[in-house]
Image (cartoon, rainbow, N blue to C red):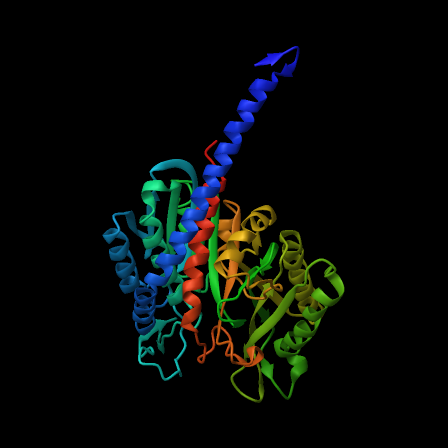
Length: 448
């Protein structure tokens, strides 16, 4: 009601009272949810560790996570959730609909392992084998995806127990192939797990208003949470170069075109792409060559040389400029030596960018979950395909420390190392983190 263009004081007071009541109700529900999360996370810790150890002892490479997916689907169905399997080949999606109206949040875990041989002497250490790029390899959860899966399953159990007073919907993504497909074909047509999940529509029905994920991390004290607003992890693009020369006797190099010499010049030239042609005042970038292959005999200049490497950046504009500069540098150096160059750049992961506003709003949730042991972390040179979810909805991706606190953090075996170790005391913090991020968001974002 408006009188003479102004809201009547009595009406204004009523409206303020309604708004205040809504805020108080949301705060009360949020506090109650946190109490239950803390209690249930502690109660579920034995089953959390049992699930993590089971998955750790039976690791599976990207797009072969059939046993893990079956375990996940069974536990989710036992909770009475709506479950879909076979998503992006071996992924699992579950939907929890709260009894009250509200927004939708998505929580993500990845399930795949790595072609790494475990060295730790644990009763549940992996002895598994798998096929990677056509070869038999040892397989290990050397990046903690077993922990991610177990954490999200426990989170699903807690939130399902709160269904009757949950305002909104929670979608659980159990994703395959974050590390890439084990049957990778070097033709640029491979699709990583998250990208395929998005392409298959997991973020459309229902469409989340926010998406959250976490990653266990070595070199960070167990139970500590590290976060960063804005760009957090790098993009990752495969660089493949073929230098085409002309084969000849090594004693008569003038009769041919030496692709090895051109290749050496190319490697040196590529170092100037970042150091002289890229504005690194805002974000760093990396262009690295990891392999060189060419030649069959000491006295033969070969026909060609193949090189592979990686391009990494934190900004979409810088990323595209890097691609153009790399192509030009390689092609012109080859041309100057009379050779030809074929440059292939395969875009794999986008940069992972945490929504700044969402990050700020959810900081209290992180502080509660980790009992105020929260720090702002540095840029990470690794890459994560969580980035594809965060392009579709505001996202927040955080790191959970898993290195025992009595160890020297600088000497901890890093992720992807055969000695990678998870201090399991941190996992309950991960459950509190995902559960509180979900419930805090639902209670503080009423339906429109």
